[in-house]
Length: 158
Image (cartoon, rainbow, N blue to C red; front, side):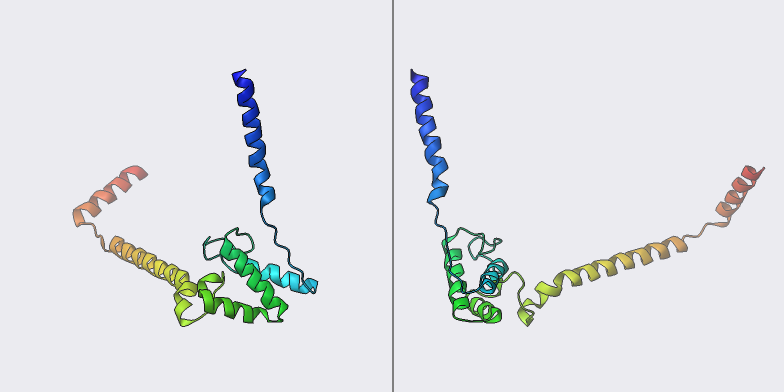
């Protein structure tokens, strides 16, 4: 009897937990054209959610991402270009919101830093190789060691 009640309660709890996703809000936007809808989709995947850090606003469930999606929709409906929308979002949230920030003096290291680090690593490796080769070439054998080496080679040939 105890297990029967436990089973019923567990089943009810499981059923309630499985129905929660149904209660989630589904955003629907009425676009004038398919091009506007495609622009919306593209723009929302090019912008980063400020709360989720590495999720696009298109995929984020954070409230601020919903607000940003709504803002993008309003601006597309107002006839603004993609660049104008990106400029607006960048001015409000900084270059961080864009997955591909513009090339500015502030973002120079972000764009070219990895390349500079790679070049520095290659230069260091090259110098180490040259130094190692130079050190190996400077090692000279004494006359006794050279004679001993000749004797070893002579014995092996015979």
